[in-house]
Amino acid sequence: MSLQEYKDIFHNGVWKQNTGVVQLLGMCPILAVSSSVVNGVSLGLATAVVMALSGAAIAPIRTFVPNEIRIPVFILIIAVLVTVVQYLMNAYMYGLYVVLGIFIPLIVTNCIVLARIEAFASKNPAAQSAWDGLSMGLGLTAVLAVLGGMREIIGHGTLLSGIDLALGDGAKNWVLHVVPNYHGFLLAILPPGAFIGLGCLIAGKNWLNLRAERKRNSTATVAPIEAGCTPASH
Amino acid sequence: MKRIARSTLQTAINLVFFAAIGTAVLSSTFFLTHDEIVKSEQAEKLKLITQIVPPELFDNDVIQDTLTIADDPLLGNNGNTVAYRARLKGEPSAVVVEAIAPDGYSGKINLILAVRANGELAGVRVVSHKETPGLGDYIELPKSPWIKGFDGKSREVYKDEDWKVKKDGGQFDYVAGATITPRAVVKAVNKALQYFAANRDKLFVVNALKSNSKSQSR
Image (tube, rainbow over all chains, first blue to last red):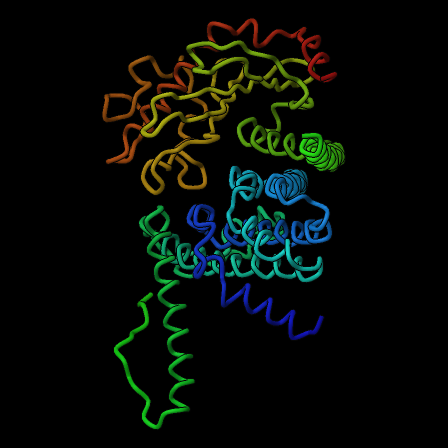
């Protein structure tokens, strides 16, 4: 197992196969909890922890589980891990637990988790599988953080509101009022804002990909071609 | 035939094995975190209660001093709910109950009210609601001080016709464009006060420590 392999898995999870903007799996939590940075990052991290743990738990037993019952066994393990995470959050991060509510148990039904187990952990050793789960989860967290930040700034004019729910009352004055005396822009907070924001992110990612590709081509050809591809305005 | 039966049995045993491990992990986590969960839930409740019951009004452990209330149309609750009693030197000084306003703009609005022994409202808070964000959500304290307009009000000060929003000829403020929400809240608070008036004896019994010890042993 080389360092390069881990690097590839990480790059694959966070950028190339990003669950949020490339695979478009797990849309339900992405759209529902991305109304603020803190909510988005918290659920993203909870998902990442579950994915890493389930990768580590399932990879070692992959040879013992009969093929016919592998899906029920995988789901069972994922459900147990999610419930453990839920208990821990309920006990030690109560405020956040209340805010995230139904979306914590819904991690079980998040397609990303089972998809990575099926596609990766059931074919690879434990260390790589855990790393793959974590990378995929972090990719999702990054999308949730950016989308949550966009919606929060445009919708409320603040950043990091509710951080005291995650880190205790001491963090209360970490909240940034990016735009003072802002009256709010409701559209960004409501569900349509999530769709519009996610669309912008996907467009942005595609634009970056295209630009990188063109750069590669332009080093090969003499005259670079300027196609009419403009970045999404946001 | 025998082979099929054997492989089926093997699969079943396999599944049961994983289910047993899962159950063991879950139950141990449950027992490890249970106390902490109860503690944080009570801390959260106490935080809410101290918001509406001034600290000089009680010296008891409010969370433990509970009273079970059967459902009543005046409270709008379904099934039993729990009321908390604030006492000062053993004398009940205020009672905290939950009430539901069923007719919000988008569904039920859950309220928690504290009423002093003299029938005066110590405070009201919205616990949860589904009103339009940015429009009907001014009933939440972080968004607007509107809900504090109930402090100190009673059915002595305001008669039935006053327990309405100003648009309907009552005494309570509202925001133009979002009248359904405050209308529902005002109506529910008024009804809850009627419940208090009717059940005052039951709620403020001095010698109610029996129900208290019962709930503690739970």
